[in-house]
Length: 388
Image (cartoon, rainbow, N blue to C red; front, top):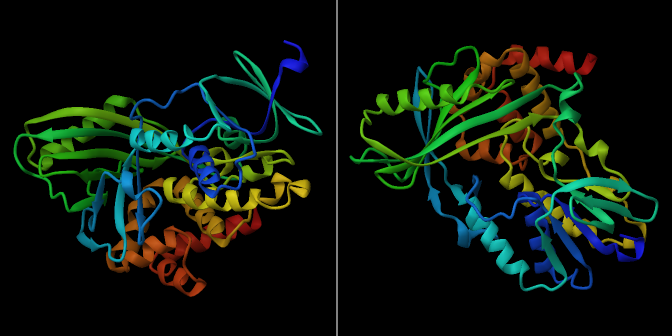
């Protein structure tokens, strides 16, 4: 193929996960990019329900029409106490992956300037005036590239920033008897054996007989699949659930790190999503962060394009530093997770905690949440981070 046949686009998105699709969806909704050509590249055609996203929100969102379930209450528990959390003014929302993909692609299909191709990206090469992108089938160029293909080695090949995983296996179960409360999600249940880690059960009931039951860890290393599944079986047995059908399964591993992915951003290439550090490092939550970051990015792209450089997008905040301290503690003392989260939720205001985790609190409100946590580990982490 000679250079005259290489197709040029204004924007190319390599990888079409949550962050890319949210960004392009908002670009077309804004009406400000109708004269720009946009190419989405992903080897996955996004035709299956491959994940579930949850987020809390106070107000209507762009995604309200595809929320499959909402909860007004949540349970937090450990081996010593249980607390029912009234989430008002928030609601905890669930969106199925396939519903999200269909919703976004339905809108994108109405815009002739947007192209989606199911091709595996093999090469990205930034030149002075454009970016070259190679796939197994074709070659393309663009003015600006947005990459959400995560490279594990960047974070794992360094020691300055700790790297944990939020890893989980979930079963969608259907029981014969009515055992679940569909109005109340189990946000974190630390009453299970910790085994030297931060381990909890997460339960999202959609009816009295159906729920997603997920065994989750915040730790460095993954487990054999049967260990997750064995723990789910034990948990169901403790809930006195003997007869059930497994309707569907999900599993995943989300990196939890304050590694500065944005330092990989260049004049024409911006890393987004997990690859750009858009995942909330201390919790592994992606939906709400990506929603906010994608909106910021669309506004950023509307700036004067003659001076646009992607290195100017990222803004570091104090919340990045808070996350760094927590991850430093959990990396060195992974068994402290239950203690730290329990101290926040035992007497803390749930709405304030959610606001804090959404990075929307004032400094005074930050302190209300932080001062509920055990002091010594955070003071030690502070000195370690400062003098590293």
